Length: 346
Image (tube, rainbow, N blue to C red; front, side, top):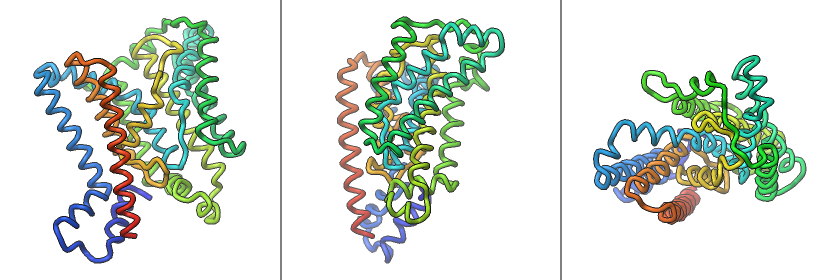
């Protein structure tokens, strides 16, 4: 079910038009338009706090580009996570997959092959590693019957450990300047990493809201048994969702390698928490069946802006973690309230 159709259903579920301003406000708050509007207001409030506390240092164009550049890597992972959670799953291994893909793509053998041919070898290697890890996760969950939490937790430990073995716990420096120059360049003043995030988000929106694959994702996440009876191959679709997330992790690995010019087993640390938090903040139900790529983009921007404001005001990372935790709890409570209201109307 698309974001648009979700709004339409919400409107229809109410039966007769709301008769009071309070009822209209409640209906708007429960719709996708209302949720996205709330995210925009939250982002604007954060920007206002940034300007009030850090002044021109926050409002500077370079700082805005820094926020977008930092949001781009975790943003790509979060788009993939939106599909998995909407489909009723969860993936705790995304950070470890990013680390493994970054290490594998920057080994001496890979870089030598890239120098002899083209830097696209580095990109292809990272994508292959990400897709391979996603495929293993999907097969374990869909055909092995392993609970997503356990399967991806095992992948988290295995991928991170394999990355440490391959890199020998050392940082691998990227020597291919063409690769670095391409991904650290810009188009019309917009950093290439931000453009990649925008393209991935746009493709994700189309895939989720305008294709059969997206409609099947909503169906599988909402009620797997009903989806199976409707003729959807739930197991195959689940595998595809995890492969899609693995591909996003591969893209994120390329981006972080280009940004830092290194491949290391410490890349992607706690990405799983940041990605899940951004998806939940954006309005995607943790129980599955409802998801929004637009909301996820706003969720990523809110968290990145929050971290930037904390950094500019010299506040500790511990305070940032506490603030993020409070925001996640509030978002989940609001989700539950809107879900109950929606159930009552239907």
